[in-house]
Amino acid sequence: MNRNRKGEISLTRVVGIPSSRVANFLSFQRDPLQFLINALPLGEMVSLRTSSFRPTFIVNSPAFVQEILVHQEERFRKGRSSNVLRRTIGDGLLTAEHERHRQQKKYLTPVFYKERIQAYAEVVMEETERLADTLQEGVMVPMHDVMMQLTLGIISRSMFKTELHEAKTELAQAVDDTIRLSAKTIFSPIILPLAVPTPKNRKHLKAIRSLEDMIYDTIAEARRNPEQYADSLLGLLLDTRDDQGDPIPDVEIRDQMMTMLLAGHETTANAIVWALYALDRERSVDERLYEEIQDRPLTVRQMREGQSAFDLYRGLAYTRQVIQETLRLYPPAWAILREAEQPVEMLGDHFPANSSFLISPYAIHRNDRVFGDAAAFRPERFDAGISQWPRFAYFPFGGGARGCIGSQFALMEAGLILAVLARRFRFTSAPGQGEAEPEPLVSLRIKNGRWMIPHRRV
Image 1 (cartoon, helix red, strand yellow):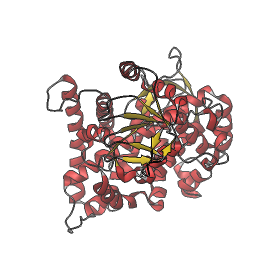
Image 2: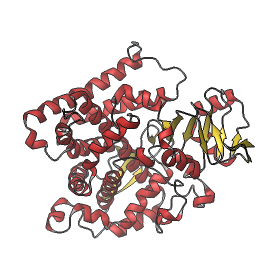
Image 3: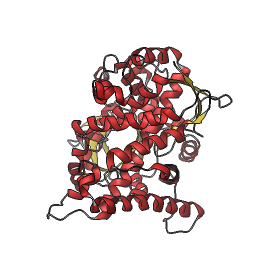
Image 4: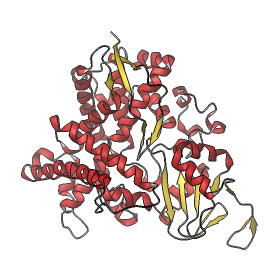
């Protein structure tokens, strides 16, 4: 039991985890996803029984998620996760806190207006067609690497008006290196400064330099030819003024571009690989998807003769449901971390300042009481829309003020990539790989990637 602010006795929704602190730490380090799933039936808010100075909780209840992300979001900071990611992407939208985050979100929001997303849709189709033209019947491809390069090309063209060409492979590897090394640090008990010359730190710094070289070269080119970048994210950043009327410095532009590069393409790449894997396992879903897209005009040339690429996406109801179901079972943001900056009361329970909260969409999306047979891949469960479930029972893009600013762009991008590829090919997993195992890095990917074999539909 607990006492509320009026001194009245109330029933607590917090339960203590039965295992020891050491056992919890080892279990989480060994398999964080399974640890979170195992905690799901224990209660709405599960205390890990850590120190009283910095208690840690796993949040399983949509009601508590809503309190943290929406109703009382100003009482929380991202904390440790932002501190680790800031080493790579700087103080951009993903890592900025409170007022600085609000200011950045305000000037970045126009990049994701509906009319901008409609224009980006054609870029998505062009880049995906270009990729599809290189795929050969029966020749297996490393699907994660291929999707990373595809979405990197899309984000570079749509956000920065930049063609990467031969640099795409190198930059995709640099992104991968920074993601892997950041992920290993977020939950590490000890965080060494990047200046410490360990092999991992040297590799991390090399990857950051590779990305920065491209970014600062692009900024310089945009300053020389601003008219070519007028309707891009980079053009918007160059035109942005702070509260004193001064242009934002290049380092802030660099931080936002790094943020988009890391957060804006790796997540979509992972989602597409998971979707193709699911379609390979669920042939009935693949067949229904193909029925929807087989007679659609899924080329840029056909688009220019009829409806727009964005209108095409809007008409692909089942394709969108496949993406939604993929994001339910394999949400890129598998964990969301928050820290209380001050004492906070939520739903009758009191939590001290510095309390840490781990919210896992991956686990919460697997609640059988909400979804029924939650482990099954069934896109039709979205026929009635997401309003059929409690708010924050399904939240692949987070929520509240810090919800993903590019969620509509990501849904459109994933839907069109899947439609264009699945219209021309059916993909099967190369033999000998076994079932895909999720790897919880900064976002959720298939461990060791996935080799897949394209088979022509027609």
